[in-house]
Image 1 (cartoon, rainbow, N blue to C red):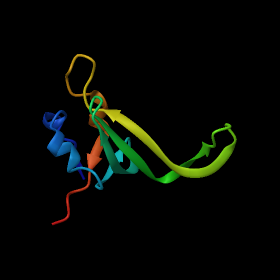
Image 2 (cartoon, rainbow, N blue to C red):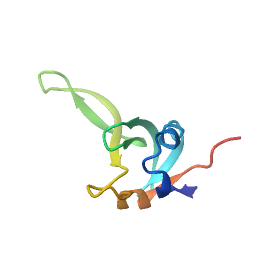
Image 3 (cartoon, one colour):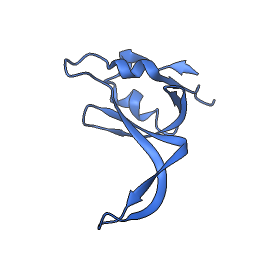
Image 4 (cartoon, rainbow, N blue to C red):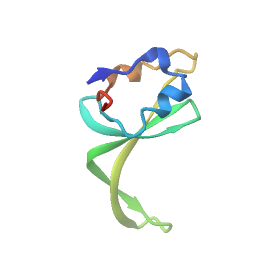
Length: 93
């Protein structure tokens, strides 16, 4: 596993290339699921943990993988300290 390169926290091409890669965030296993343009943010899907999703009426409906969103930039525009907890699996060659 390699640490997230904070120099690329705003590089859209770099961030998009992370989609599908396995990662560890805070020591827990995740997969990079998506990149949202607001922030930008990385969307991570937990490899094992699930949460309960509600239906439109608020009733428990089904189990879904737990996801988290990580801002890549702080309010002042510098790379987020949360990225220090993100380690990425080496890309397959």
